[in-house]
Image 1: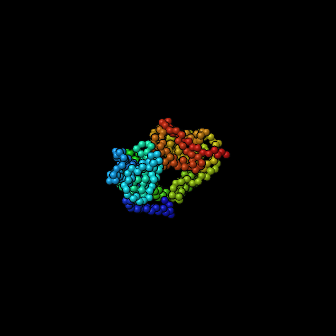
Image 2: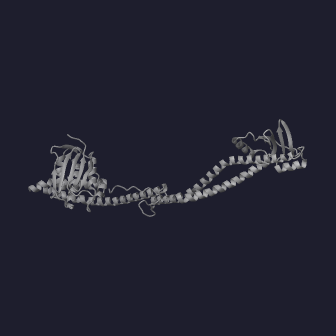
Image 3: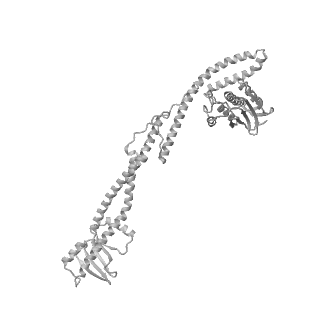
Length: 476
């Protein structure tokens, strides 16, 4: 509004970088789900492989026991070498022996030389932890290792001893691991796909709409294009969408109001410029009237001159500072009754039918800014008079009293409508008249705050409205 002031340059809007497919939330959710399931499968694999190894050893041990039963059918517990070799091949072991009463009895022997490192394995003394540790060693064991398995024999007093090569166990463990890995990857892929589809429709797509709306809103905050629509979802995503929609609408309204106020400010500045020139001319006429010898003119001239001076100062402030903000209060001793009576005489000049009753004590002196107090009282009294005349209220009366809570301005008007009460001290929103701007109470409250006080609505209804002015207790 000041001709020398420069409007701030708008901040540059950073264009969003093009999103790549591997940067999207969908791909990340898919990858994290796949990795999580494979990680869990990996934790399960070790105990599962331990169980497979234990079952493999028990199968060989059970097959060796069945092969040893063939000896019981022979009177001498002896069989031919060919039958022994066949029994051992069917059991997939190298030899079978029994230990009873510290005597080692070789039941079946392949007759071949066994080469390799022997590893004792007692199945009678195994724990879950030891089985897990041994299965890890089985994957890294040398291929020529020979396992000597010891377990309970056909009776509790007998111990069976079976010699088995490590290579078949190692080969079967690797095959089992490959099957588990393939199955785990297939399960992870299916589960990740299902979770991805569900999350895509429940989370990713709504968040993509929210992101697109935010980016579009950043490009054009005051526009209405591609505005995010409210949703009926009751979860967190739905509440976030509705909150964002409300925020966008509120911010867009604020931008439109800012643009409207900027246009209004420019118009006010132009009007004030011409108004100040017209008031200067009127002041010259007022000076001429002050020299008149007519008693009525001499009585009214000082009041007219003060009103013109006050109007010129307000217009100058608007042009100098770009807004009609009150100047810092000049606190000084002032007669409360005299100041308000002068404001009432000025405010009610156009409504002689409105009765003004001043119940303030004549000797009350307070510390206040006389100019601010005059403008504040004039605004309140003028608003009350306009409301009563517009509503054709009877009687039309304004009463000013001093209570322990402050100075109260009471009228006999129709009261404030609900919408005016909700927006009482908001610019351009509180007026209930078609020709009103809603600025009178806003300015009055700013003037009261400038003197360290406040202005509030004490009561309103069909019997009238009461405003209370609260000022600091600065008595002299």
